[in-house]
Length: 424
Figure 1: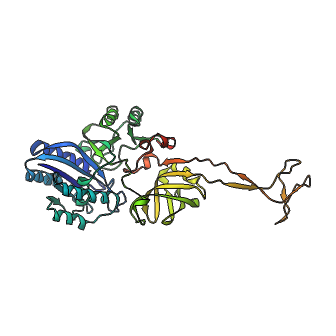
Figure 2 (figure 1 turned 180 degrees about the vertical axis):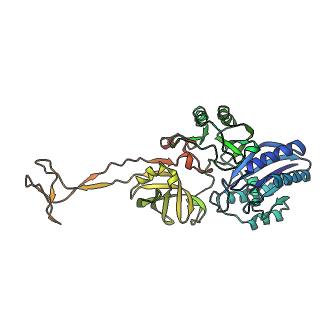
Figure 3 (figure 1 turned 135 degrees about the horizontal axis):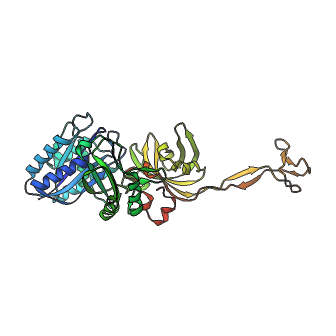
């Protein structure tokens, strides 16, 4: 029989990684009770969930097995050994779903889409498990059952892959040793088939995490061949093992379009069109805000300090510009991931008229009295309007790689017509 194994919430902010635990589990199952079919899947869920750990990713993989009971035992042993169960916020869940039950898989598909874009409750997950008698493992509050079910039911219209390299266990929590130049070289050799390995504009390696988990680095790309090409030139401390995952990262799968919704709700992500009605302003800390009019009313948008040079684009917006914004809706504000400038408004500046004799700028004679050249005594009634030059052009603009969320699609994946405004 073919069984989908889904697992989530085994990590914490202090360590572990669900992908690492899943890799250990797959190796153990492969040795004793089943055959792993295809690549495991790393499914990124709604990035706005308040109780998520880091990347809000769940893992699933398909197994051909004759012994479900043995596989459940192995999973339990692995979770007990590796999960961060001492952390108050770590609540693992593992599910075992019959892959040949088409009706159940269709139900889980609908549930998964909600978990990726919306907010689902434990009650919903437990109802599905109870109704369909899904074998499962629940630890503590078992909140990981939500992501575990979602990872099994996920269907991707667009996919990328990620190669995750893991450290030796004795190195967990230690400072990572790597050659930054080798990551920039890997990007030079494999981009755009790989992406978000480094941030050239901010001179940083972003594929090496700072958290105390088992991941040494991760390479994202369009194919196994592409990530392996980058992997082969990277220089780091000793690699214990690696695994390639198929994933929904860099696909914009989390975004609702306007025609899909009736209202905006907190902790969801949207694509919204509107006209700029409040020009950009900056607050302490370097965060830039502006507002647009939409069919849902006036909505505030924000480019926060970590978006770095992306804020320079936002600062140039003016009232009347037509834009489409991409991002999460939190605290009644769209946190920008991308922006499309559809129309640049004509902006006019007013100046005192020039004297037609000497070319000097005239002076005002007082409110409502017109203007006069002091030297030539020539006069004019009104100021002149001059169309201002706008140092911005229509198109899509993105945040730099160091500020990009897992699910946000980089422009390099969105077609050649968008690539003039890439922040690489």
